[in-house]
Image 1 (cartoon, rainbow, N blue to C red):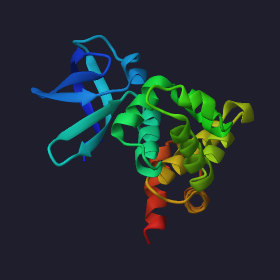
Image 2: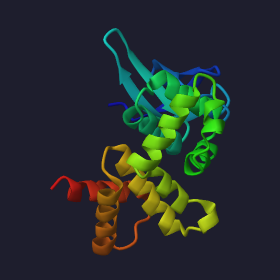
Image 3: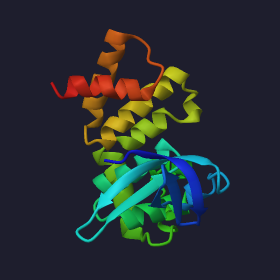
Length: 202
């Protein structure tokens, strides 16, 4: 699994980039949300990636933030009928924060305005993220309206990462809280996720 690339940004187009890593050029598909945040070509870039393996090709999809990659993974792995192409379209048509707000509010009208996403798909996105996975509840709890502390944000990010990996909201919460009870406060969500996975896989 290729989880990130770090190298020189050789070329940047709205839908794809080329990253030179040690003399090897990697072609990476990106959403518009990441294109807007890229540095100038010729400079160093750090891109979070997701490898998509098909029968006839391997495709690298890149994101400028973990939040974008996490949302992509949620859509592809947990929403019926949403594949890599449609997930990229969703990220290109709406910011991560706006998408989260739309799911929390069950605003299918806003989601269905994204190119390639119809009313039925929008309804399925809201239903499967909100009711089946409990993702919307995590997004709502972590929203600015609740004035979360830095520790709260780290905890919510860890829980969402575990949900992305396929764990249920309740068991993800329990594992993260257990880690916090044992280890105390964490400075990074990645640390919490690693420790929680040890508990969940016992």
